[in-house]
Length: 271
Image 1 (cartoon, one colour):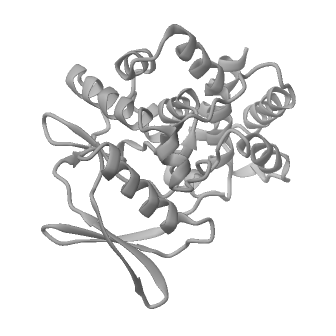
Image 2: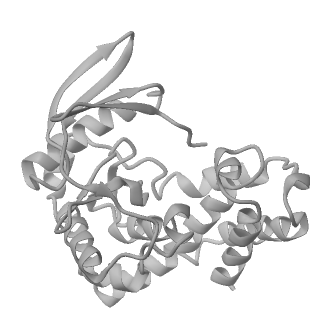
């Protein structure tokens, strides 16, 4: 399951991202994505400066860009519009350029996430630490039943570059423009799949940062793309249920009752 992979150091002009875990190609993915974005959509993300090795750890050094991470409240209309434009630019990077750069499918992409979720949710769970173990167990069983079907989500269309992790902390806002940081999980994706991931992120849902309808409109999705995004959302709701199970980092970091809230939400979403 996901864990902390890096440490950041800042100077007035640079950010040094030192990877403490890179077994899944995180450092390579970050560098390759930033290079491609700088070529096709400059200003959307930090300019990659150089790669280093520090005590055996890979380091990606990038330009420090202006802005502060999005807060915990709902985005303003201006922020939603700017973030939509940023994601639209990202998704419009030509697939030929992505292929030429040999960038692979994003981490936990549509070809790997369903099987990973089934494996995680089938693991023996000690739910005694949950406030309502029965509710959590019902959520796990509902998620597994939904994942066992193949007719409830569309076939992925791997046509674009995605950031993968759009935790609001990875969106910098300078008062006028949203820019994106943290591409260590990024790669080839389906925009509808990626946006479903973004709007289901636990840090965004907790305080309603992203409005799914408003953001998908700002990105420029057609009604068909919006429907595909909605169909992918239960997959990411199940992902966060798995992350919120006892023993995982999200269980420790989030308030008591978060697992039960997510289980109930997932069951409503797939009903």
